[in-house]
Image 1 (cartoon, rainbow, N blue to C red):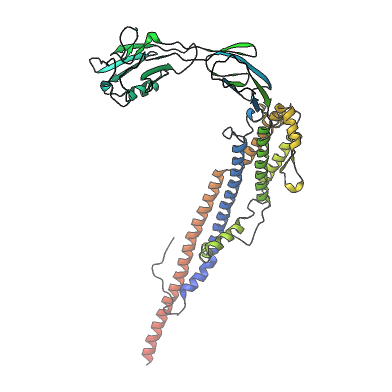
Image 2: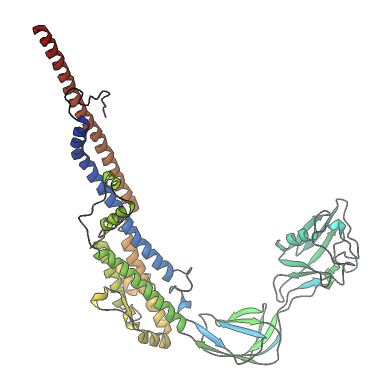
Length: 499
């Protein structure tokens, strides 16, 4: 790009050269503005397409992700929900159902004992007064004074994990390290009993607890050597399994929390009294989730149809810099709303997506013999543009009589490699995922970025040419002014000669 350092503006001719050049450049500026507007419209189209993609992403997150437990339909638990009721007021046992449960009656005949952990505690109060957990070990006032080895330490093993503490460590420091270790135990101090308790974190007969004192006298592993904490390995109470009877069958479990046949049991206390529960299928949660799915689906379809049918306002092109400078912010906003309308009107990729979505509702799922429409998910009239009109009566009947079939219509998967076979064997959700994936494949941010870069380079080239053109105009006017100045000088000289 060249530039003229000297610009003569009508000094001799009297012309308004500045205005004349600006007028001439307006025609040239139109070429640059046209490409800038094309780039702006291209950016708006990308934003409009991204808005559709975001709508699809929100729909998938709500209806097809296990991270949305209240609304997703992808998991079996969405279709198999049970209520558990009992007439008993007993608090000895609690019962809840998973999706693997079956309807019926369950009787806990008796609970002989609860599962317990291997444990040991101080044989008696370990200090004359309540201990402070923030007190250093060397300053603890214990009934049996705590002694340290030559290094000022105490050492012991719990479940073969070695621990060493300095005399300056606090009681709380010792507890924190033991509780966070791989020994898998819990140690604590009770101000109420003035005792230290140590127990395995697991319950049942297999839960283990071993203690070995290494140096100092914190623990006792033989029951003879005095322990400052009153804890002896010989006083450990072994863990035991829970023992009970369910529907006449004797059961033992290592934990008080366990699951059998899709039912979760929580034992709280032994009882000799039978407690009965009734397990019944509840279709309301599944119905609510499917209703939510229909609402979200219709919102997505409505949004996409709105983009397809938006009016194109051809009289509203993207504003140029000069136009924006002459308008208020409100006017600019209103103008651009008009200019952005219709960017995806009749977009064939979006039309194909909506066609695929509608087809997914009416094609039967291979192996099931029913389509989503057969269980109540039908599209309404033509005026509703493919939105689902939910037949709740049909859906309730399907959920009540064959919930497994409803689940398969929604969630069935296929391992087929052939696209047509895979589609036919897939449930509604997987068909929708395939349709969304195919639509997303038509949109490439990399391609958009590449095309935008092309526009930017074209604008840079035109802007450089524009500057060169302006400079050329100025050189011409400057040459004219110079020539007129020379002619005026010659005319004055001749006039002087004749006079």
